[in-house]
Structures are given as structure tokens and as C-alpha cells.
Amino acid sequence: MGSGKERAWKTQGIKEFFFTGNNDIMKVMETIVKKIDKNNIDADIIQEAGDILRRGGLVAFPTETVYGLGANALEEKAAKKTYAAKGRPSDNPLIVHIADYEDLRRIAVNIPPGTDALAAHFWPGPLTMIFWKSDVVPYGTTGGLETVAVRMPSDPAALALIRAAGGFVSAPSANTSGRPSPTTAEHVIHDLNGKIDMVIDGGAVDIGVESTILDMTVSPPMILRPGAVTAEMFAEVIGPVDVDRTILDAESGIRPKAPGMKYRHYAPKARLMIVEGDIREEILAIRQLAYAAHRRKKKIGIIATSETLPFYNYGIIKNAGTRENEKTIARNLYKVLREFDQEDAEVIYSESFAVQGIGKAVMNRLEKAAGHQKITAADIVKLQKYRRIIFVSGTDSARGPIAAELLRNQDLEQEYVVDSRGMVVLFPEPVNQKAEAVMRSVGMTMEPHISQQFEGENILDDTLVLTMEESQKDKLRSEYENIRNIYTLNEFTEDTTEIPNPYGKPLTAYGECLEVMEKLIAELAEKLNSSAEGEKEWGKYM
Ligand code: TXA
Ligand code: MG
Image: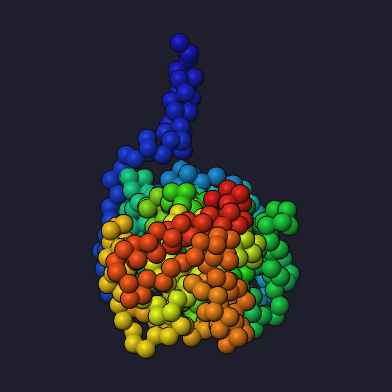
């Protein structure tokens, strides 16, 4: 038995453990959730939340960027609670949120010229500025630093709350450390229910990525984290600013200047990889990867845009927004990453987005979420020679559609768009009834097929044209100079078994034709598979 003092110390230690350690043990309090209308703020709710903050409690609230986890910024203990609830390393400093510009002078000293102009342009708004701290700011809030990060958010509920709380509210993003920042109250509740006193639900945020951080203690000021306020926008107000090199460059090997930027942040549970190239290559590469992953029974996700969505067939496909407006992508990014978690995606492939305007912030967050794992689209694209296969027969009503349907039913290591066309198609018609009958006898159907004239449309370098007869090949070759890959089916499979033409003959002739075709298509599949170069590569990418 130790002395009373020792025991007190031990109890203290246990308390600390309960407080900062295992997250489940911390689920002890009832979290109040209150909805608020930004256009008609309920003063009682703000009062209640402000009181909680004044008493040293934690209140999550909406800002225009992401939801913040508010605490009294001038109280050492409140910062501790914040770190505990988030499971965040305590060397990661908090941003102090203010509602009135005069208040900056209470928490910051040596405020440089330029600050007034920046504040006039961008406050309230998605800008955080770093200054030398005054004595009233505890080291708990600044993670032990002599500097303090300050922001004046524009969300009216946030401003009202800051005033109700006494003017200085520290607020990191209201997520569990390492998870994507919350853009709705539901996200906050998912992460922090039972660990904080209250959540103010103001609906989905507007911007969706965290504020731009600008270090005002150096000259010229330096961007430590990109956000909605860009370097170009700063330049217009105070002239050129510097940008921390580590923001988009993983290889620089330098420690980011904002302590929080060094962690693998914003991360989904799945392995996330960014596919880079021109947009066509990105789509092709993601299609190949998604197909390969699907064959391996991996649960995969794709981050696409409204423009590219229709090109994907496999996996959980999410629309992050439109390429015409990067703001839409910023707004949806974290939500999409969280949804993949909910749906237990194992691997996520993301297109890359333009690094301009807020796009820089989007790519910065995406790269952090991916732990800087990137895939060069061209490396994947070159692994697949053919993507589209067109079978050409006389009227596209029997042999061609049979070949196409048989191939679609093969176990192919790569994805192909398989079509059939005819040399002479006078009317678009369903397939020959006898051809359909023999296909049904082996459990397949060509029901949806309508015969179509070959017109040489969309023949690309990755298109393979396979004709039934030599004469068809010769004719197409002379008519269409753009066809690079054209063979008879026999030639390509190196099998000389003649493909009988059953046209006008009894059902048995169709049966015989099907038998030959089954053999040739199986050989075709084998040939395609044996030349599929990706098979040994995919492990790296999934
Ligand atoms: O949009 C935002 O800024 C949101 C909302 C809630 O206002 N807040 C937010 O806070 O993103 P948080 O804690 O998730 O990120 C704060 C970042 C961290 O990377 C931290 O290292 C950096 O700001 N930071 C804070 N104080 C700093 C300082 N004195 N010097 C350098 N970096 C600092
Ligand atoms: Mg954060």
C-alpha cells in the first residue's frame, strides 16, 4: 500500500488514461444535438452552447469550411479535452476562432502590416492567419508553440456562438483524428457521439475543405495549407506570398511547417490511389484497374465526376462533382471518402483534378488521404492492347452476334467492349430465329441485339476487327484506311476450322456453326488472356 499521496497520483494517472486513451471507454456523456437555421438563429440554442463552452465543455458547430470542435481557447484544460475527444496528438496546435477583428489584438502580438488588408478582404471567411501569440493564449492551445493560428469564420451560427462563448473558441475539425473532416453534423456525430457535450447541426457546409493557413510571422507570408483563399487572391491584396513546398510535393522530404500537415490525415480506411494522366488515360486506366480488382473480388471504389461517371462499370462509383466547377468537388470530397468507409471499400481509385483555384486544396487533401500513392495512368493503359472487339459478318444476324455473345460469356482477364456489325444491313432487325434457338439451347440469348451496318465509326488503335470471311476483311481493309487491327477470326486464332455459313439452312446447320464458333471463341479468349500483360502487375495497384 502506498501513501495517500501516491494513491492520489495513481488515480490521477488512471483518470488521464480514461480521458486520453481508449476511445470506447470515453463514451460516457450524453451528446446534445440541436438543429439550427442559419437564416434564423435560435438565440436560446446559442446561449446554451455558449454556456457549455464557458464552463469548459466541448461543442461542435458548423463553419463555412468544415465543422469545428469548439472549446474555450484561453483555457489550458479545454485544449486537453479537445485532444482527448479527437484522439489527436497534443503537439498539433488548434486554431483560435474570433468573431470581432478587435479581438485579434488580445491574442496576437507584433501583428505585421498587411494583416488589416487581408482581414478586410478575407475575414470573416476561410482564412487562418498565424501570428506571435500573446500571454493570454495557453500553450495547450498552441501545441507548445509561440505562435497562434487565428480565424474569423463567416458562418453566422459560428459567429454567434463565438460571441456567446466569450470571444475565443479553439476549433479543430470535429472529426476523430486521421478521419476525413466532417462536412455535416452526421459526420460529427458518427465520430464524436458520447465524447462531446453538444453538436449544433447547421446542415451541410458550403466550402468543404479546411481554411487556407497563412503564416504571418514570416516575410513574405507563407501558405502552409491551401484552401479556398488562394495565392493569387493574396497576391492581389498584399503582393506575392510564399508557399510551403511540402504542400503538394511528397518527395521533398521536408517537414511541413503546419504541424498538422505531417500526419496522414483525412484518410479513408481503404487504400486510396490517385490516377494521373490526361483525362482519357485516367478513365482507361481506372477501368482496367476496376475490372481487374472486380475479378479478384476486391471491393473497389472510384472517385469520378459527373462528366466521367458513365464510363465506369465496376465497383462503387461516386460522383465528386463537376469538372466545370472545382468548388463542387471540394464540397463533396470528404463526404465521398466517408461513404467509401461506410461501404467497406478496400481500394479506391481517384481521378485527379485541376490544380487551380480551390483545386489545389482538393488535390492537397486527396494526396494526403492517399498517403501520396499515385499511379501513372499511361503505365496502366499500355498494358492493354485491345479494348474493343467488333465481329463482322454478312448481315449481322447470326454468326457475328453469336461470336459476340460467346465472347462476352468468356472469362476474360481484361475488359472489352464487344460488338458485332454487318457488311450489308438493309434494315435493323433482331437476330435470325434459328441462331437464337441454338444459342438458347446452350443457355444464352441474343435477344437485345439489333443488326447494324459496319460504318467504320469509332475505330481506334485499340479496336480489333474480326471478320468471318477473308473477302469481308479485304473489302473493309480497302474501304477503311483507319482500321489498324483487322483479321479473320480464323487468322487471329490460328485455327483453320472453316466457319460454316448456315444462312437459309435448317436448324442443324446453325447448331454446327455454333459448335465451330464455340471452339474458335474459346481460343480467342485464350489468346486475349495470354497477351493480357496486366495480370502480373495488378498486385501493386490493389
Ligand atoms: O477551416 C478550418 O480551419 C477548420 C474550421 C473548423 O475552422 N479548422 C481546422 O482545424 O481545420 P484543424 O485543427 O483540423 O487544423 C489546424 C491546422 C493544423 O494543421 C495545425 O497544425 C495548423 O492548423 N496550425 C495551428 N496552429 C498553428 C501554428 N501556430 N503554426 C503552424 N500551424 C498551425
Ligand atoms: Mg483537422
